Length: 373
Image (cartoon, rainbow, N blue to C red; front, side, top):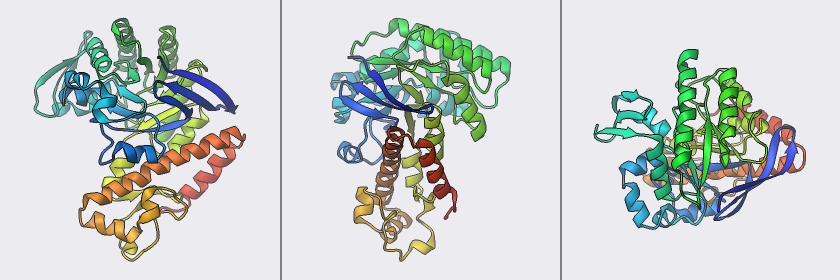
């Protein structure tokens, strides 16, 4: 079936809803862990379920290169291939083309993008049609339209031409989309320009996608600019379909996005910072490699319900990280992903109880009161 979205409650612009998928129904707003190569780095599906993960992401570009969409198709689709009995969203590969292409050299033409593989420098050509065809074979629950992630900063002329081309690509991708069990989201672009965001949103909505994403954020712009990009686009998106902010996972950014009406978020941040010894806490991020944690035999957070905090101390996790033991990154990844999922659980409760703004204010005050390195 196609995904369905029910808006159940508003608190200002913040939305509490239910996303119905082939693998169950899940509350929104939600944070979605990223499993680029059909796995969330170092973690098992069972561990993700224990964290109350709902939708997880995989990446079209990476799976196209390794192991190839046909291998996944022959395995019975992504769910069977990676043993994930839950909903999966695949991004289009567009962001990776523009961020990972070998030497960052690419040739954007009307038909698609010529670029070199980040693995071996091989010449590749990705089109809107091919991106959709790959995702159809991967058999995710939600596929994304192929777009250009506009760099920041970009001139108005560049952003306008890119936005118009992304709309043409969206139509082409939609025309070849043919997986009846999969939903397709459109992506709003437009850079930092209000009129282009409005134009992109309105024209994308006319194509009647199953959901809508705000793209081109968190690409080097300052926070105020990112929030304006959301504001410029979101008021033109329908209330009865899910709204997805791509590539955003900082706790404060999640709160700012929810306040503006976003339902879905994803980011590699929780696992990426974990591999470098960093952990989210209610009082900001901490770097567990700091010497003061050498004999700190308390959990990362006293009130955290994650597996790591229930079983291990800062001192032990620090020992693993400074010793380059892979378990250290695993334990911090478990904590960081659970931290963001639990944050979203609390956000949902605050919306249901008409106290989201108070919750946001209290969280930010604690999170920014001090930064411990």
